[in-house]
Length: 434
Ligand code: ATP
Image 1 (cartoon, rainbow, N blue to C red):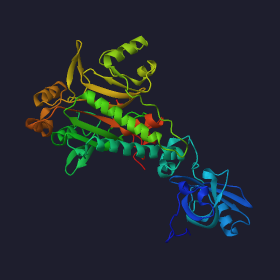
Image 2: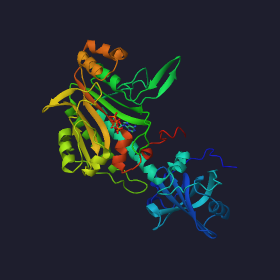
Image 3: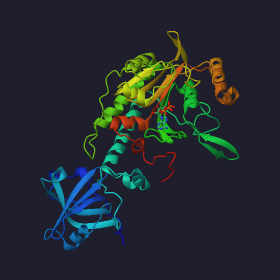
Image 4: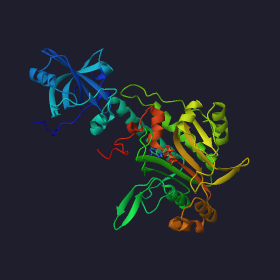
């Protein structure tokens, strides 16, 4: 029978323990990371959400019953330990606990498919099948904590910059960009879709609120299996009135910087995270310049095509950089056209990290007739977007904005190679559980 929590509460987190409180009796709670030794002495490592705690149960120094219960514990078991804090040069934080009493809330009888301390586990499906347990591993705890720090810093940035947080519908009647990979669902008696982006709604909201942001899921029916695509991802979207794409690039630079600074301050369970330096001015290359870079690296470059990861790798692109003034052709209908040299370009940018796209943004078309004409050019039925177009008759400000993929940003800032590990319960073409 597991022990009851009852009225017992933790008195200290791992990080509260130090030689300064030597001699005090404390109660800690957490998961068993490892048990070593046997017979006369057992060492137990407990992990709580902040770090690790060493417990030393030595014959003669603690109750025999307690010592035997400790020796029999298996990793992942959930325990409360009450005992005296004792200085120890070898232990983390310079202290260990000499136990007086133990409660086992959840005794693990099975051998888990992986150790809680494992840095790597070969098969990702083994981990994902018991994701909540997987997320206890230090390496993932650090990524999740980094995500939390980054989000907090980004929200603070938006608050300081006078943005209003908005929430737009995720159940929608038609595609934002037409034909893209949408999930279709039943909506009462009709068909609906899961929103692939808050694009049109956030643009509309600049009419009343000028500066808006949303941090929310986007849904993409991505048919390919890649380490950089999820079917459900979190997008940090912002949209701002009376500015253009240059101002948005400035903001994106700030957002990446505040997120990186926040993560850099975090002492991970597995040590400091290796956060890349963010230059004060993130380099900006026009699409035309990128074509030249690719050509000089011997990569065939055709105007109008995407900048594929393999080409960017061959050209040696590394770190954060913007690519701006993309060809208009492939851009969504709401992106503002421009002319650069003799080529039709758009007031658009992508933020890249090496070969990984982190963000996409642009100045938007604010004129209804122009927007309708772009829809026609792209073969989209304007009448389906009437719900959107009609507000343009009543004062749409010039505006610009972008979407930043939170999981992609974290891949860059925490050096995580697979996007599945920068989220909690990843969704992709093969996985809809847990
Ligand atoms: P890609 O070409 O890499 O598939 P995209 O051009 O479809 O991306 P956008 O529609 O411009 O992406 O979305 C803006 C941002 O949202 C991207 O830069 C990326 O950070 C994030 N994003 C888009 N799709 C996904 C996805 N399937 N999984 C994770 N993040 C995504």
